[in-house]
Length: 251
Image (cartoon, rainbow, N blue to C red; front, side):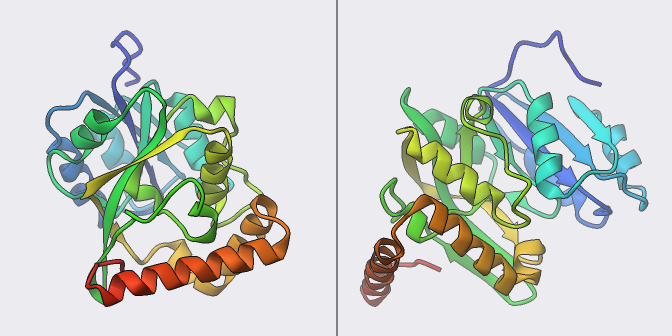
């Protein structure tokens, strides 16, 4: 199933899944609709018992494993280890790409010095839809805010040159990893378009308070002394509020 003889693709699209049969078909349909980009599909299943592991295997992904893991970031690290693309994109079970040119537009916008290329995300779930824009994100202010992982593609080499996801974090290893990449001087590039529809019923939302406490731990490691983070966070909140007052869509 792992097409080792195929030339390395532009993007490795990674799907991590566990007992997600109800939502996987829509996720895969949005990937198969992609045009203008060479991609591979890497699936890491957490030993599902609902038939979804067998279903994924039957869809002929370029790489596939199904086995117990130590959580979502362990599964994501395993998937990166199987990936061969220049770029990595995480399209986890339940999420969908915004349209047929989402990946192609991000790849086309990338410049040689860029480590991360990102756009906007539409959150959806029981509370309806809302767009979260990330045009305000810079290398200087990312630590004071956030950047949804479904909004971005990242160069795969940073997972070996910088670090894999740190399993010490249950909800924010992706945020910690992004800050490590930014610290290397890798470029961030914003593309003004919706990249994905993000299902807001995941682990981060279910444990929102615990996730935010853990995120503050990450921020403390990457931004000290504490007064610096408090000041930066305050200034960012003021900036985003002013944008909303001017009618700009933030969240």
